[in-house]
Length: 490
Ligand code: ADP
Image 1 (cartoon, rainbow, N blue to C red):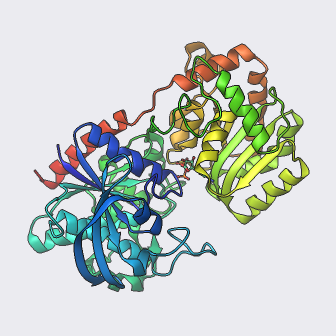
Image 2 (image 1 turned 180 degrees about the vertical axis):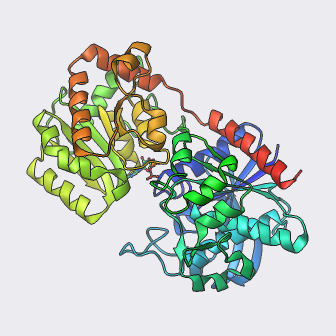
Image 3 (image 1 turned 60 degrees about the horizontal axis):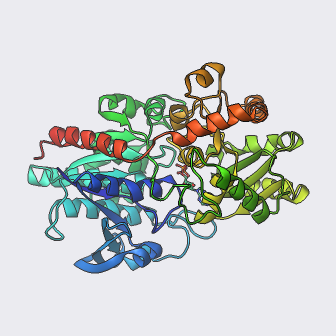
């Protein structure tokens, strides 16, 4: 079994802003359960350093990338997974969001902050920092994109690359673009800044480094793996992705069954499973009380747990909300982001306090209570690499109402008559990103809810679906074998 180093900017439960953290927190542990020595490399953001258990310093290095002092720590996540953490206070020790300041402006030195992450991954693979060496570096998203470039640089210097590399795209829309002048600070040879390197329309692209220099590529659903090869979803990188199509696979994310189990989730006021759903009714009543909604057990309760961004399509929810309420529905929303969406939902919550309950911010425990208390979870995304909230919704008996795109298309099957007949129905799916299609799906949710036997049957199927991490962990192992063979690493 190969030794693996996962490189990511966030990791649940230490630090989470989105689905990347869920994956980085669950995949290494699932691989370790298969007997693989998988470890993590993380930047030393305050929350990560504070959450690392049994931490001890394993290396100290001269300053680089603008950091006056650098050290590498080794500790464990709460589930026991070993994690290396980069201690570089000048770069990482900033309160709040790991990527941006209080005004949501990306930090001006993000190029150096994340170049350090990739560079240290390559140093670990080179055996420079201690006795443990990964045979394969698995880098996640643009923050870790330079790892493969630094491995290639070492390969050029030594005549042999120290490790194989896999790069996973969790969201192609976030690319890590910087001014070309930032290249000089990376310490890479000049030829790396070419059209077949880090250069992207005159800028410097971290995600392109990952896509260009890694042995194998993956993204988080088979549909998204196809979509990103098109002009519509390729974000300008579709040509490169087409060129690398033979090295690119889509592997769906799993659900961490220990953290997301409605039968024993400590965040919930009632417990339930696919066969015994009394506890779900208690969760719904408590959620209505918590958010100040009318205590109506029969009202169809829609939940949203989401970053409030253009990608997530929540403008459709906002524009369709009064129609949804007029049909007797309620909305529970947890999220933060776009100021116009925050203001729009706040205004409707003010106008309809008994029917719209919102919380702006990030709250892990409340997110669990929303999935458990809702009847439907809304995921009307414009695009969605994998999407986790529809999977959590299904496990917690909230049927996803989702647009057919990316990972949503691969995991949510509509309540059409044929899907109801063969038992695959587990949600409500709409095709085009349009208000009319979204509103029609909402009306179909009410129609299905009006047939309690059919509703319960679909909910039972949704809850019984298996989407753990063991399958994806094995699929990544197959990808690692292919990457090791391609890099001739044994
Ligand atoms: P993305 O990574 O694009 O944000 P995903 O659906 O893949 O979307 O993952 C989002 C993750 O973040 C899920 O675990 C979801 O429950 C969580 N999440 C999103 N917004 C919030 C919030 N405001 N509070 C708590 N959890 C949230």
